[in-house]
Amino acid sequence: QLASVGTFQVLKLPLGFIRVLEWLQLFSIFAFATCGGYTGQLRVSVDCIEKASSNLSIGIDFGYPFLHQVSFEAPMCEAMRRERVFLIGDYSSSAEFFVTIAVFAFLYSLMATFIYVFFLNKYHENSRAPLIDFVVTVVFSFLWLVSSSAWAKALSDVKLATDPDEVQLLISACKDQTNKCGSVHGPRWSGLNTSVFGFLNFVLWAGNIWFVFKETGWHKGASKLAAGASEKQGGTFSQQPYNQGSFDQSGSYNTQGNISQLSEYSQVGEPTSYSNQ
Image 1 (tube, rainbow, N blue to C red):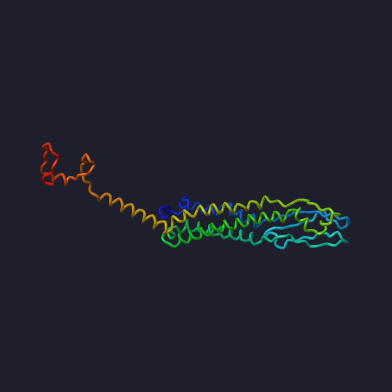
Image 2 (cartoon, one colour; image 1 turned 90 degrees about the vertical axis):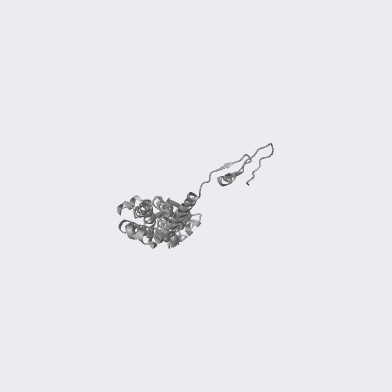
């Protein structure tokens, strides 16, 4: 199918069109741009009995790769002493894995689209190229599913770990009821939530598996076997002779050869007899 169209017309086929979507798609760009380039901030306040030790706006900045040794300084409400507090959790592995898959998938889609457009004939002539393309597509589909699931779980944990109410529990001064701690504002998640489009990448890559499989020798070999079997079966039916016969009243079938052997028929009040049977 690929060899029967022009070089640039390959983009009109599902195989080439989906590759272009995988390359130019906003889903993949959102995946590594919104996740890898995200920075957030939350602020909490600590109002000590000793007003000189209070800090009513403690800024906590975090971003990719998410809570890897993120810390801030908070007052201890004891003679101007301060402490360094670390946020709980390290979700850098899930974030880095998700961004890595997004980047490599983007680059492979770019390379595959370039081959479809400028080296279409060689792609079709080489039996290994469609097979490699099929295997890589299956692998990336699986990796998109795994990385998107891992990152979705990590994103939920990041939101919980950066909740201002949860962060206040980490500050020793907030454990003393004589001091007052509060939340100034929480982080904005609108940009980071866009990275969940990774699941749409899985749907797109998984849907392309069938179109890539149709270009492999496995599918073409199965199609040839099915076509050969149907032709052979059709030829067998066409070679079978058709013999016209007759049915008697008892339902038995008599061919013309048997009829030609009848030489005499007599009916003289007795049952029917065949003298030359």
